[in-house]
Image (cartoon, rainbow, N blue to C red; front, side, top):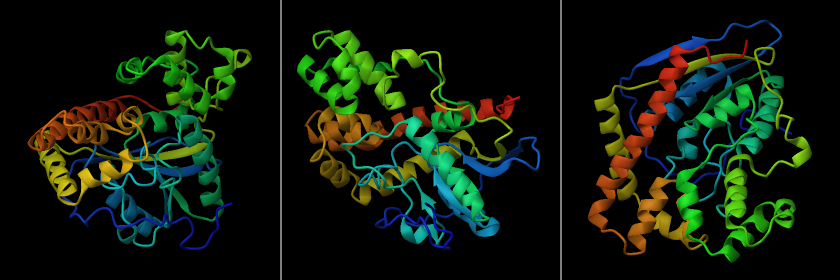
Length: 324
């Protein structure tokens, strides 16, 4: 249970990010229609490197809030520089949740996030504080506010990596991550094994057949949350400069060494699953690319990712995202 102590829930993190000045950026705020019966929450979103974490701390200090990380990678211990994980110093005493709660070889799914966040929102609210959700994993926001979809889209990048594995390794991964499903599968059917891992990566487990027609989580509509959004959306040129500055700082502060340490704990497939920074630097550590190629390759890939995030933000701005 969450303690109502002012410092409850602060992650014990080593300093991972230097303090960065808040630069001018485009912002907007959307407030969903609500009633007094709803639980108020504040959601802060923006593309990578846009300053979401520092803005969340400012809002928490001003509005008596606690922060819930909406980031699929910051849950893992040891992924500090590569995920822009906020340092304990920069938290400024504000409780942060869902940071450093898993080891890198473990899994954490959208279903886990919905379960944990629903509990945290209730506990934070019962302490008389404002739950502030901040991060760039938009699938997690959608899962929380609209429920997890029963279907799971194809993941071409993950499939490409899984195709490189032997059938024996595929069987071992399914057995480790979802023993019940592993017992149901033909261990020689690579297609079914890969599809199972694809679903597990998204949902945490393969739903039982008799639950196919049942949603995996309760749909959370406006009867549950009174949602305010703060959207940080810098102009393109400004964001590209912010991404490059972030990357240069990360590389100078030991990002390559961090990836090397992580790789000592996981294999290449898992390293690639942990994000493009770990994938690209992993290629360098294996001698597949030069050190000089790291900054331009990472910059290009992060910009592609940021463009996808900005597209989601445009959708958030242009469409009514809330439940009717």
